[in-house]
Image 1 (cartoon, one colour):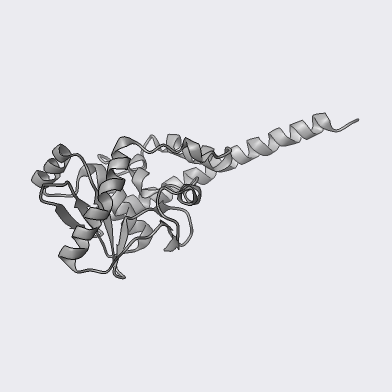
Image 2 (cartoon, rainbow, N blue to C red):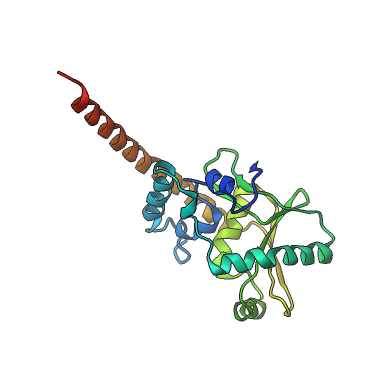
Length: 216
């Protein structure tokens, strides 16, 4: 794992993750029902390639209301976790696999072997997590994706809402993790294929312009 030391949601963080498939979008790669590469993978690849090759304007990165709410509550939820577990909790920036192909932004590293993913949803949603007593399906690909990217032995998922009991569950690698890992490799092959097509188009366009601008 490679850690890029830049606080999350800063311009440096946005720049570091440009064009890189990240765990928060891995649900767009692995189909939950078939556990195979998703048919929407090409759409995600086009989005990533647009990030990579088109001019970047940091003003295009928009913080939604739920994101702002999470930013407000996250320090409080992290403090609760550190107090209750007595673990060494350290905030980190953007992480990539050693090869740099895939990335993740865990909310914290916990000791040397684990990580922490914090969610601060609206109370209604938080209560559904408490009653469900399992890793919410909406975050399954994200959390298992962090295991793939970081190589950690586990990730603690925590949902926190003020005035309600927090919810914590430990997620360890399993058959879903391996299915995701396999889908990511398929995705990467397709990513390279489409990127080559884009690069060839860009280079061809430049050559055509140069030919028209060159006298004689």
